[in-house]
Length: 120
Length: 107
Image (cartoon, rainbow over all chains, first blue to last red; front, side):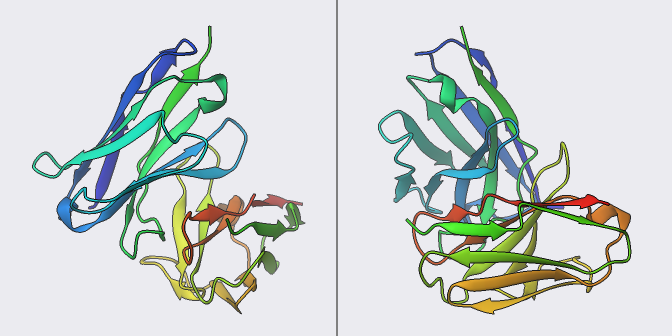
Protein backbone atom coordinates (compact mmCIF):
# COMPACT_ATOMS: atom_id res chain seq x y z
CA UNK A 1 0.00 0.00 0.00
CA UNK A 2 1.30 3.45 -0.91
CA UNK A 3 2.18 5.28 2.27
CA UNK A 4 3.33 8.75 3.30
CA UNK A 5 4.33 9.42 6.90
CA UNK A 6 5.12 12.92 8.10
CA UNK A 7 7.20 13.78 11.14
CA UNK A 8 8.99 16.72 12.71
CA UNK A 9 6.09 18.85 13.85
CA UNK A 10 5.85 20.37 17.29
CA UNK A 11 5.67 23.54 19.33
CA UNK A 12 8.02 26.34 18.30
CA UNK A 13 8.31 29.99 19.26
CA UNK A 14 7.66 32.76 16.75
CA UNK A 15 10.78 33.33 14.69
CA UNK A 16 11.93 29.76 15.20
CA UNK A 17 12.57 26.94 12.76
CA UNK A 18 11.39 23.40 12.15
CA UNK A 19 12.17 20.75 9.56
CA UNK A 20 9.38 18.46 8.49
CA UNK A 21 10.00 15.10 6.86
CA UNK A 22 7.74 12.85 4.84
CA UNK A 23 8.80 9.25 4.37
CA UNK A 24 7.39 7.56 1.31
CA UNK A 25 7.01 3.84 0.73
CA UNK A 26 5.54 1.29 -1.68
CA UNK A 27 5.92 3.42 -4.80
CA UNK A 28 8.71 4.79 -6.95
CA UNK A 29 9.18 8.09 -5.13
CA UNK A 30 11.58 9.50 -7.72
CA UNK A 31 8.87 9.45 -10.41
CA UNK A 32 6.49 11.90 -8.77
CA UNK A 33 5.99 15.55 -8.04
CA UNK A 34 5.44 16.00 -4.30
CA UNK A 35 3.62 18.71 -2.39
CA UNK A 36 3.05 20.14 1.05
CA UNK A 37 -0.46 21.29 1.94
CA UNK A 38 -1.47 22.76 5.28
CA UNK A 39 -4.66 23.12 7.25
CA UNK A 40 -5.01 25.57 10.11
CA UNK A 41 -7.19 24.40 13.00
CA UNK A 42 -10.82 24.35 11.90
CA UNK A 43 -9.97 25.80 8.50
CA UNK A 44 -9.64 24.62 4.92
CA UNK A 45 -6.81 23.24 2.83
CA UNK A 46 -4.05 25.54 1.56
CA UNK A 47 -1.31 24.53 -0.84
CA UNK A 48 2.19 25.41 0.44
CA UNK A 49 4.90 24.10 -1.85
CA UNK A 50 5.80 21.60 -4.56
CA UNK A 51 8.91 19.95 -5.95
CA UNK A 52 9.53 18.18 -9.23
CA UNK A 53 10.36 14.48 -9.23
CA UNK A 54 14.07 15.17 -9.77
CA UNK A 55 14.19 18.20 -7.47
CA UNK A 56 14.94 20.58 -10.34
CA UNK A 57 11.86 22.75 -9.90
CA UNK A 58 10.32 24.10 -6.72
CA UNK A 59 7.41 26.47 -6.10
CA UNK A 60 5.96 28.19 -3.06
CA UNK A 61 2.83 29.96 -1.95
CA UNK A 62 3.40 33.70 -1.53
CA UNK A 63 2.71 33.39 2.19
CA UNK A 64 5.79 31.20 2.75
CA UNK A 65 8.13 32.30 -0.04
CA UNK A 66 11.56 33.21 1.30
CA UNK A 67 10.91 31.45 4.61
CA UNK A 68 10.22 27.82 3.64
CA UNK A 69 12.38 25.51 1.53
CA UNK A 70 11.19 22.25 0.02
CA UNK A 71 13.65 19.52 -0.87
CA UNK A 72 13.81 15.79 -1.42
CA UNK A 73 16.23 12.90 -1.18
CA UNK A 74 15.20 10.33 -3.75
CA UNK A 75 17.76 7.83 -2.43
CA UNK A 76 16.03 7.95 0.95
CA UNK A 77 12.49 8.28 -0.42
CA UNK A 78 11.98 11.32 1.74
CA UNK A 79 10.50 14.77 1.23
CA UNK A 80 11.41 17.71 3.44
CA UNK A 81 10.12 21.14 4.35
CA UNK A 82 12.51 23.49 6.12
CA UNK A 83 10.50 26.19 7.83
CA UNK A 84 12.26 29.31 9.10
CA UNK A 85 11.04 32.58 10.60
CA UNK A 86 7.87 30.90 11.72
CA UNK A 87 4.81 32.98 12.51
CA UNK A 88 1.65 32.31 14.48
CA UNK A 89 -0.27 32.09 11.20
CA UNK A 90 1.88 29.11 10.16
CA UNK A 91 0.18 27.04 12.85
CA UNK A 92 -1.45 24.13 11.04
CA UNK A 93 -1.39 20.45 10.27
CA UNK A 94 1.08 19.95 7.42
CA UNK A 95 0.35 17.18 4.96
CA UNK A 96 2.62 15.80 2.31
CA UNK A 97 0.90 14.52 -0.81
CA UNK A 98 1.85 12.72 -3.98
CA UNK A 99 0.98 14.19 -7.36
CA UNK A 100 0.39 11.55 -10.04
CA UNK A 101 -0.10 14.21 -12.69
CA UNK A 102 1.36 17.45 -13.97
CA UNK A 103 2.53 19.28 -10.87
CA UNK A 104 -0.72 21.00 -9.87
CA UNK A 105 -2.51 17.92 -8.60
CA UNK A 106 -4.63 16.05 -7.98
CA UNK A 107 -3.09 14.83 -4.74
CA UNK A 108 -3.23 11.15 -4.01
CA UNK A 109 -2.54 9.91 -1.46
CA UNK A 110 -1.99 12.24 1.48
CA UNK A 111 -0.03 11.53 4.62
CA UNK A 112 -1.64 11.66 8.05
CA UNK A 113 -0.13 15.05 8.72
CA UNK A 114 2.08 16.58 11.39
CA UNK A 115 0.97 19.45 13.61
CA UNK A 116 3.05 22.61 13.78
CA UNK A 117 2.18 25.05 16.54
CA UNK A 118 3.84 28.46 16.58
CA UNK A 119 3.32 30.12 19.92
CA UNK A 120 5.24 31.77 22.72
CA UNK B 1 -4.73 32.78 -8.74
CA UNK B 2 -7.96 30.93 -9.47
CA UNK B 3 -10.56 31.26 -6.73
CA UNK B 4 -12.93 28.36 -6.13
CA UNK B 5 -16.25 29.04 -4.42
CA UNK B 6 -18.17 26.11 -2.98
CA UNK B 7 -21.85 26.13 -2.11
CA UNK B 8 -23.61 25.61 0.11
CA UNK B 9 -21.30 25.94 3.09
CA UNK B 10 -23.32 23.34 4.95
CA UNK B 11 -25.76 20.75 3.65
CA UNK B 12 -28.06 19.09 6.19
CA UNK B 13 -29.47 15.82 4.90
CA UNK B 14 -30.63 12.43 6.11
CA UNK B 15 -29.08 9.07 5.23
CA UNK B 16 -30.49 7.85 1.93
CA UNK B 17 -30.99 11.33 0.54
CA UNK B 18 -29.24 12.75 -2.50
CA UNK B 19 -26.54 15.37 -2.02
CA UNK B 20 -25.47 17.86 -4.65
CA UNK B 21 -22.45 20.07 -3.99
CA UNK B 22 -21.35 22.95 -6.20
CA UNK B 23 -17.93 24.38 -7.02
CA UNK B 24 -17.53 27.52 -9.14
CA UNK B 25 -14.18 28.78 -10.48
CA UNK B 26 -13.27 32.42 -11.02
CA UNK B 27 -11.97 31.49 -14.48
CA UNK B 28 -12.01 28.38 -16.61
CA UNK B 29 -10.15 25.34 -15.29
CA UNK B 30 -11.10 23.26 -18.33
CA UNK B 31 -11.76 19.76 -16.97
CA UNK B 32 -8.95 19.83 -14.39
CA UNK B 33 -10.99 19.74 -11.23
CA UNK B 34 -10.74 17.30 -8.33
CA UNK B 35 -12.87 16.56 -5.27
CA UNK B 36 -11.70 15.38 -1.85
CA UNK B 37 -13.47 14.05 1.21
CA UNK B 38 -12.23 14.77 4.72
CA UNK B 39 -13.77 13.18 7.77
CA UNK B 40 -13.17 14.69 11.23
CA UNK B 41 -9.64 14.03 12.42
CA UNK B 42 -8.72 12.26 9.19
CA UNK B 43 -6.62 13.00 6.19
CA UNK B 44 -8.18 14.23 2.92
CA UNK B 45 -9.00 11.49 0.41
CA UNK B 46 -9.18 11.93 -3.34
CA UNK B 47 -12.66 11.10 -4.64
CA UNK B 48 -12.77 12.48 -8.17
CA UNK B 49 -10.15 13.75 -10.63
CA UNK B 50 -10.41 15.39 -14.05
CA UNK B 51 -14.00 16.44 -13.32
CA UNK B 52 -15.68 13.05 -13.40
CA UNK B 53 -13.25 10.17 -12.91
CA UNK B 54 -13.61 8.28 -9.66
CA UNK B 55 -10.37 7.52 -7.85
CA UNK B 56 -9.49 3.94 -6.97
CA UNK B 57 -11.90 2.38 -4.52
CA UNK B 58 -14.46 5.18 -4.58
CA UNK B 59 -18.04 3.86 -4.60
CA UNK B 60 -20.28 4.42 -7.59
CA UNK B 61 -22.72 6.53 -5.55
CA UNK B 62 -20.20 9.37 -5.97
CA UNK B 63 -20.40 11.09 -9.34
CA UNK B 64 -19.32 14.45 -10.65
CA UNK B 65 -19.74 16.63 -13.68
CA UNK B 66 -19.05 20.05 -15.13
CA UNK B 67 -16.61 21.97 -17.27
CA UNK B 68 -15.06 25.38 -17.50
CA UNK B 69 -16.18 27.20 -14.37
CA UNK B 70 -19.11 25.22 -12.98
CA UNK B 71 -18.80 21.80 -11.38
CA UNK B 72 -20.90 19.53 -9.21
CA UNK B 73 -20.36 16.51 -6.98
CA UNK B 74 -23.36 14.26 -6.41
CA UNK B 75 -23.78 11.56 -3.81
CA UNK B 76 -26.77 9.56 -5.00
CA UNK B 77 -27.81 8.10 -1.64
CA UNK B 78 -26.00 9.19 1.50
CA UNK B 79 -24.45 6.49 3.63
CA UNK B 80 -23.56 7.20 7.29
CA UNK B 81 -19.86 7.29 6.39
CA UNK B 82 -20.41 10.03 3.77
CA UNK B 83 -21.05 12.76 6.33
CA UNK B 84 -17.86 14.80 6.03
CA UNK B 85 -16.37 17.93 4.52
CA UNK B 86 -15.84 18.00 0.76
CA UNK B 87 -13.31 20.19 -1.01
CA UNK B 88 -12.88 20.93 -4.69
CA UNK B 89 -9.43 21.73 -6.12
CA UNK B 90 -8.37 23.08 -9.48
CA UNK B 91 -5.39 21.34 -11.09
CA UNK B 92 -5.35 23.52 -14.20
CA UNK B 93 -3.27 26.47 -13.18
CA UNK B 94 -0.41 27.10 -10.75
CA UNK B 95 -0.80 27.59 -7.86
CA UNK B 96 -3.25 24.79 -7.19
CA UNK B 97 -6.16 26.16 -5.16
CA UNK B 98 -8.93 24.67 -3.06
CA UNK B 99 -12.47 25.71 -2.38
CA UNK B 100 -13.42 26.52 1.21
CA UNK B 101 -15.32 23.28 1.64
CA UNK B 102 -18.90 22.06 1.99
CA UNK B 103 -19.86 20.25 5.18
CA UNK B 104 -22.42 17.50 4.71
CA UNK B 105 -24.03 16.95 8.08
CA UNK B 106 -26.71 14.66 9.40
CA UNK B 107 -30.11 16.33 9.59
